[in-house]
Image (cartoon, rainbow, N blue to C red; front, side):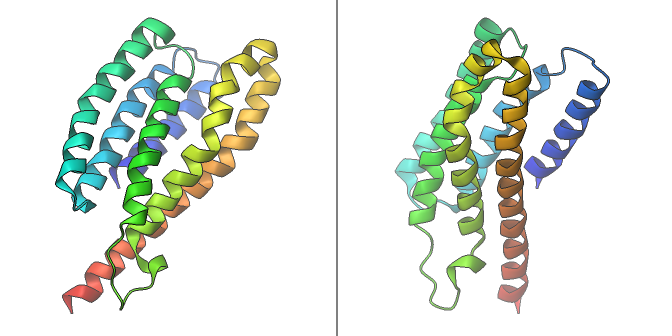
Length: 184
């Protein structure tokens, strides 16, 4: 839920800054990237049953934060879209949530699409899997033709974002619904 609220605030503020042609707002994306990775790792830690993998994910959080801050400071200077940070985050989350997806609890009374971890994993896999190559090419496209790069960014990332956050919302609904039914 925190990720959705933070994302909504980031999207609204970024849009306001962009429409009013206020520069320097992209520093928020550099910090949000670190927050988002940490929150998705925390969710994974609550759902994972394998202690060895939990340890690896716990260790990856501060390492990713240091990497993200160094990358943002030395490579991007907190200006522009942190595509390297997002791609590294996506790569790590893709691995983590592939594990979660393939190790869902085997509950004969629950269909897979009623499982919240299924939807959250699918959302992460679709978004970061779809965005990985485009975000890697984005700096080159931006350098060649900024207007076309921004147009393509909107055409590719916006639908992926919609799928991503709809999957998370469905996962949260399943989580709330499953808790309500498990109490009775």
